[in-house]
Length: 294
Ligand SMILES: [Zn+2]
Image 1: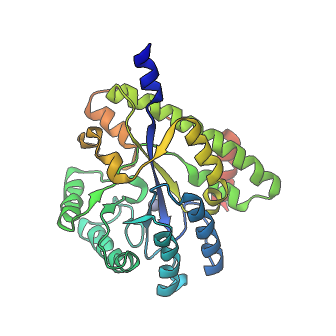
Image 2: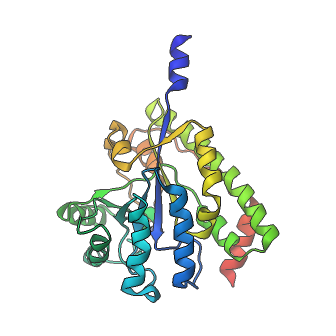
Image 3: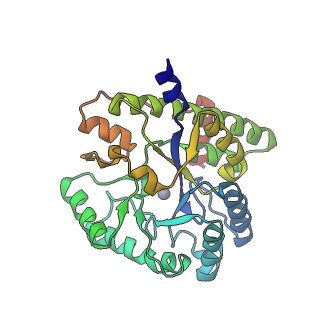
């Protein structure tokens, strides 16, 4: 009895990692500096004190210019949040050579280092979470990450926030309200699913890494998202703290075109059966497909 109370009382841990800075993950093309700045201030305002990390594509929005990018990244740094490398131009590892992929990582560094007041970024996040189709490709880029001193930043709580964000970005008031509601509910189901997966793969809860994107949907819903996580018993930790858990030393032998959650990769390594993640509501997918067809 006492033991179960102690287990229940133990806080769960999650890292908030936000990709595609200065903004992205919602298929939008128009980005004024005013729009990006307002979105960033709102998002970072909610993330203060959460140990979150933003992963930057320094060539994502050339229209911002060098100064505009630095101004936006300064909002993150001033908010006490860390920054990591997410490449310069977000290439798909399957469509470029290893030297091209590595050159894109190197090209991202000067802007990042400047934003970190001269410090070198520690973590690297793969675009699309794709780590390579072949052993040669995987080993090739891992070797160049090692040479540059990067640690790979895994994701356990993978999800399709970008689908919701794209529909949200183009919707009217009623549509936006509906997307917000369904998004929080969907993310709650994502947490439940990967909590179960953690028990199946490791026999215990592990610290999670959540992937989100830097866009208006997440800026507008962050208070509700954080409340959902707190309600599930989560505390917000840094990537370094989460990755100190031995689960993160499990081998990742995944080869393939797509980039699944590391929990699925570790399941494969440990011979644990496959499971399918929760689906998005059908109407959201239908709206998303309509937007893509435009
Ligand atoms: Zn990305």
